[in-house]
Length: 247
Image (cartoon, rainbow, N blue to C red; front, side, top):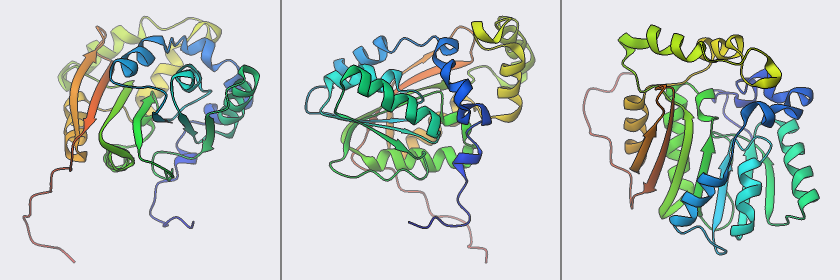
């Protein structure tokens, strides 16, 4: 399918490091992510052997692989060929047969089959500017069945814009000293400068407009990270008419 020329090229905005095979090999050690609590949360909300789960920005598949034994179908989506290759290799090694790796993104993934019961995304949405976040969230709502659940984790700022200097410096001060131990100050500074983390109050307006009702929100003590559990409502709210159309 030919994509329109105005569509954002997600492959160019993924962060060059995520496309590099050598970087991907050590990615999960740096991230230090335990998928257990998120899998448990989705199981509390009804994830079971009849469920279809879509993981957007799946990376090397740590969450998708952990969730697969509890699902009927898992689709793990990422723009990085290196990430998808690592995911597929792990699935084969673990004998997991209900997981599909798809090289695509928030704006280009086309869901086939029954609507998703659950959509999950961790630390990937921030690669999109806010305009495209809103588009992506609307697409997520569309692929979910009515009453389906969206679980989102990301770098989302809960501090006031006037407190940016204090909050960011406090966060950066706790960065790892060596790249092999975690994210360094240089890497985190690059995130703040060149990627597109937004504020909670902006993201929550986008979620609501997409028809995704926030059930709960967790913000980190650092005010840098947030997690949301959302429910797809029966229909997204209609935009209010107003203003003259400008040609």
